[in-house]
Amino acid sequence: MQNRTVLVSGASIAGPALAYWLERHGFDVTVVERASALRPGGQAVDFKGAVQRTVLERMGVYDEIRRRSTGATDTVFVDTDGREQARMSGDFSGGDVEILRGDLAEILYGLTARRCSYVFGDSISALRDTAAGVEVEFEHGPARRFDLVVGADGIHSRVRCLVFGPEAKFVRHRGYYYAIAGEPLAGERAGGPRRRMSFAYNTPGRLAVRGGPKAQHMYMFAAPELEFADDAEKRRVLVDRFTGMGGAVPEMLDELSEYDDFYLDGLARVRMPSYVSGRVALVGDSAYGNTLAGFGTGLALVGAYVLAGELAAASGDHTAAFARYEQIMRRYAKLGGHSSPGPFLAPKTARGLRMRNWFLGSRWFDIMDKFAGDAKDDIELPDYAGVMPR
Image (cartoon, rainbow, N blue to C red; front, side, top):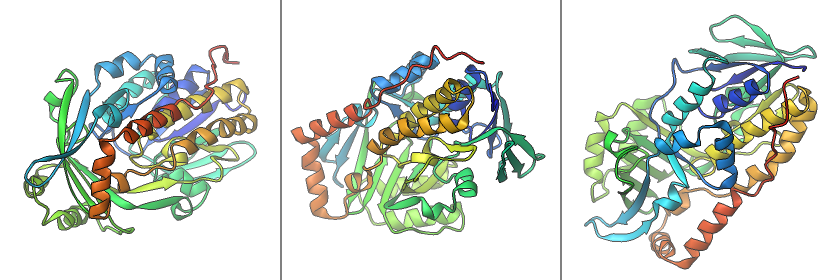
């Protein structure tokens, strides 16, 4: 087999999933991660449909994900007096199975830690693609050469920036920001009640959600692209945006300072003319991310499965494998790339809020839910079980 050594940038979800399949097919894999260790907690992610379940079952992790699942959480939209205005089923928002991102990362890391090399606390600083391989420089470690490099480093991908160009060329802000704070309570995770409720408060262009498996708090607000000096400024901006809302929101803002695990980012979509360049490929959010659209994590695992499988089927010939990977994933990724949760969860007008609440109780919502579920299975998933290391 040619091109045996592969460097994967990113140890969240797509990176360890890709490492698993590559190592299983006989490749020598190194994963580099900027963070000093695996990141615990984080918002819940979900899987839906037969295709995504098949990939998880072929990895042997489906049962463990079920065991650690958060369970279903209905979102109840209420007015400032706590009266229910609409309800969104947890079966829609949580897919077939939902798990905290940190728990999923831990499962995938456990599959690969003994067979793949992980380098935490470092990141790629420069790449040079040559006929003999990719010369890689790191922020801290010594330079090395790899046969192939894969960027699995998220929507703000360093690899994409170094190889394909600046983020502004490929990442489009979708008019909203979201924030999460506070890891879900232990009793709300696996082993707790299978059906729970979170409570959502809306005014035009703003959403605040309390409770549920994603976080103690979740916020969303409409805004053009903003620049932040640091996390402290992000917290100040969030408080400013939600000051004046009623219901439980004032109490939520008072609690915000108690949570160290705070994250704020824009809703964005990645649009790449190609997922590959020379000996470098992108997988997951770095290639086809669409924040909070309900498709990203499953898409990342399917992409990792296909990329590794095509490299194995081509005996490491990256030119042939990358072309097949692009062909298979292009349409599937596009199906999840159009929707954005911002206008639905935080409509910018009072009329939009009324229409959203009506829609959630109508049969049209059930039709949309079915279509979204069908889209997640709209791919002919190859079976690489017969591909043996050569």
